[in-house]
Image (cartoon, rainbow, N blue to C red; front, side):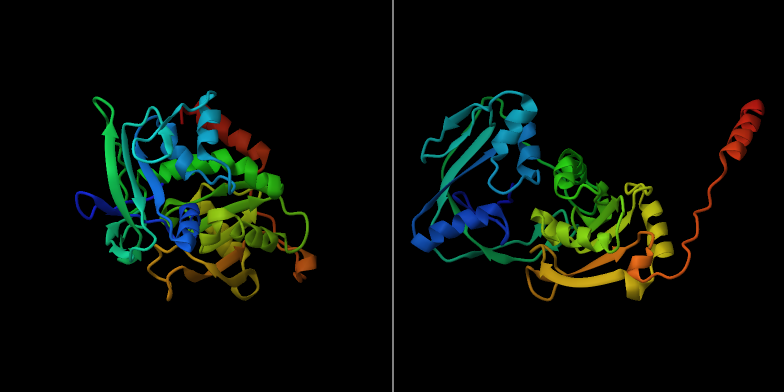
Length: 311
């Protein structure tokens, strides 16, 4: 799923970001100078935008995920002016091409999910050769802006669906949350079942090496008893369980090209926090204190009083 900004009746921008799959496909055509056929489809089964934004492993077709979720194959049809195929249920199909010999053109500013108008940057030009649509076609749209907006809930659903994939690589992961304030990947909370020293750092490095998690600016790792979907609970552990010099780690890596705060587009730094209980093997020589917790007998007694008094 990429944005296209209309220039005129027959051209748009093609905002495929530097690290995205479409940009890699495009580079093959730019290497040969051959025109790249492109088709854009809108609407159809609501599962399509979900599949398009899902963090699938590289090379896995999104239509396979859509078919898996629907428990039936996705019917595809041929386009009118190129050899590509699109879902038969699409509401609109915009066919065209990108000419690698043509100079790039500024695309933007664009109100994006970051909550800011992203600055103009040069991108390929998409030339329209045909537009087809269904009768009574519905034009789908989502509202983006300062979070939380509609796209946040789509991202949250994708994360829950693909949590088992993360666990295949990192079985110690208990849960992951992407708070709305982090606009998907700027802020990541992850809880783990910690069993050995420096395990939190292993998770940080591992996540930064997985797909779009490479864009994560901040990763906070907490213990398994923390509800990562409760931001207040995570921040309490971050403040209580960390010594900044010891438990914070800076590193560098790719950044989202939509991030206006970086010095250079697509290049930035990362900050990880180990907010787990510290072990002796991590150089912690003191006794770790227990968390204040009401005893079961006291809890039952209080509940009984509240029930008796109608509380």
